[in-house]
Image (cartoon, rainbow, N blue to C red; front, side, top):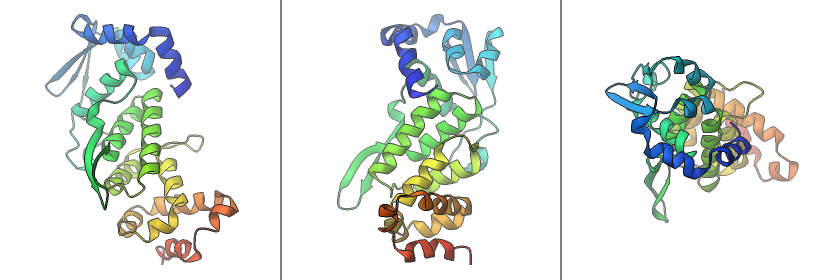
Length: 240
């Protein structure tokens, strides 16, 4: 579901109708089980968001294999994180992420501030991709892009990129989180290469290094001129 489709969805159902359905979930006609968590949801809502989940609506419930992330990359993908399943259902009724997607982080010389958790967004994206929830994917992509535009040195960037590059699939015809990250780093390459995080980021994810170089080559000459040859050379040096 694109941003346009989300707006159309809102126009069709009406925000007040979605809120009424959210408040009336105890009377919903379907239930999603994940670990010890049982959440009521309306079949109409499921069918509107995901063709994959819509196929489960012939039954009265759907049991997901629970596997909490807990900082372990291997826990993602095979099972489903109960926390993120709950976030998915929240999105179905609100068409936006909950407050759980935000964290308090400290930025040098700027103090603490509330910003989006890139790790949380990446975890949501893994689930959205698995169940082909296009609207949720679009929302995460938009939030992730805005977050990197605001702070390309986000403290969660390395962990989020590990999730994105190890646990998501991005077809050549699609602009997903891999492309969003590569474009953001390419645009700020000079600053990125002078930061402390770049060694860890690029050494752990060689595919990201190649993606950034590819995006640098697409930038207008006026932008490329601002990226020193030493910065680009530094990226090539990672393959020595």
